[in-house]
Length: 176
Image 1 (cartoon, helix red, strand yellow):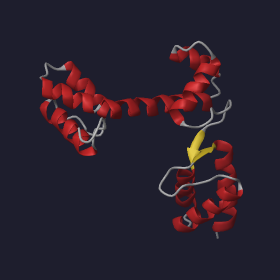
Image 2: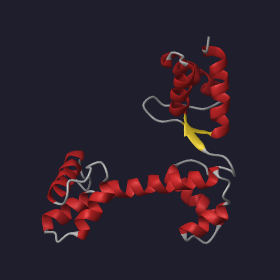
Image 3: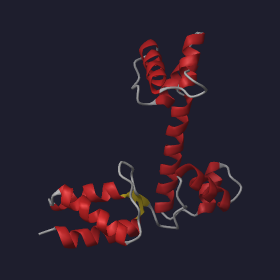
């Protein structure tokens, strides 16, 4: 580690390479698989340290998977109570709070799901044959008019309703 308690990207990459090359050549992009692989082997101290350097990335992968599964359940109108039970939580409110903490967004209502502005524009450009640059520019204008702030270089989360609104307005203005 360098300058404190933060593992650098280079150290994480080196740790992933070490474990992947020593124990089976797993895809270096899946930290959870690598941590599990290291823990299941007869490993030495250097291997254990390499595995520990990957814990943060493995945790992030699990959180993303958990949010995706909650999104799928909620998109299928599964009540928060059932989501809470599946997670071993005591209440609907606990599941909603966990979702918000992990995703950074408010919990979706029943039948509501999330997508991103970037996914909407890519899909619309592909389906219509419209110029992708024009679609993106118009989508950003429409999103801003709806009060949705997008930050350059970051995915912009949308509810399914917002995605439909943006797609309809962009299609009406960019498709010949």
